[in-house]
Length: 190
Image (cartoon, rainbow, N blue to C red; front, top):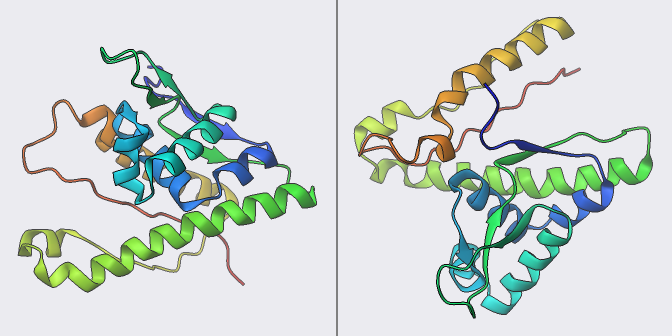
């Protein structure tokens, strides 16, 4: 079955640099994971910036094809935006210094955001219901794998997560479902 909401493959260092901003990552994640259609003002509340600053970020994301103007919701003066994709993968030519630097800038913003979320959860988890405390996890197993086995582990993790993707599940999720951030990384270490 074809993915109803395809994932963008980003290979251009200019697009990586354009996305390497906390507000832009938040915008792309929100629009991509929810399928929402928003104004700059609505988006500003999400990212904690002014509507004019958010409008600038939306235009920049549109310039690189990551968001687009959506059909009006009835008020022709209102400019609304939507995602062009459900998410993105970064995959550039690592032999190119510009690509490496751009990818590193994007990864730094992404990891800072994810680790801030994790720290925030750890600080407030005692305030959450016991069922959510027990259901959450922070794991760091050390595995011994070949490259082929690591590829298989990654494919299997993606298969497990796929049925729970927020955008595809929003219409029929259980009443007590909440957005859950999953940060997954698997890589060889020395």
